[in-house]
Length: 204
Image (cartoon, rainbow, N blue to C red; front, side):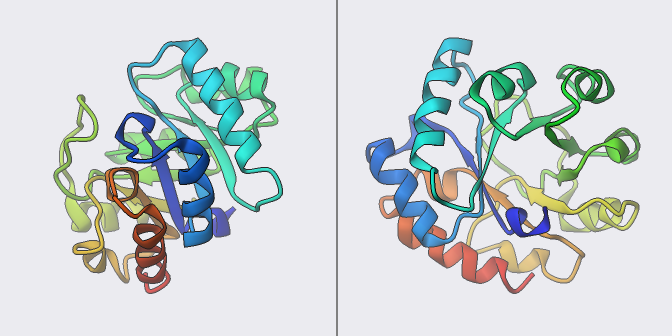
């Protein structure tokens, strides 16, 4: 599981500056190890349709595909993983209904860490200010992330406003990797952006 978390891309297709068919191969070549389809605001049908395209483009690669929020869509797509948070279907209930999925869980405080104990990995943050999500839980920063990571044995990725310019602030705090969105999705050169971030993530 840990190997999939080094450079975890949160895909928002509305940010892309090139076709999805070009973007996915570019970021995979650049070193992305996991792709989570988020696409906030899209209908269930749109998420399913784009999910099909992404999974097809990932065939033959060792990149983990994750669906955000929706275990049912992950199962329908034949996917292996889903990422949940405090405002989604409860992790315990989802795991009871869909026990074979890999589960990630978003953590912002110690209560989240406790909930995530039955999951497989955690996303911890926000690390830095970000405009990517309309709803943002309290900024905890690198020090807050370090405190939460120390309280769990689950592999963890930091999330929230991470770029090549601030990723070094996350070194040495026990992370398996970083989760990024706009730093790659909104890049004019997604291959280069992914490559630079992967090289930096290897120094965590």
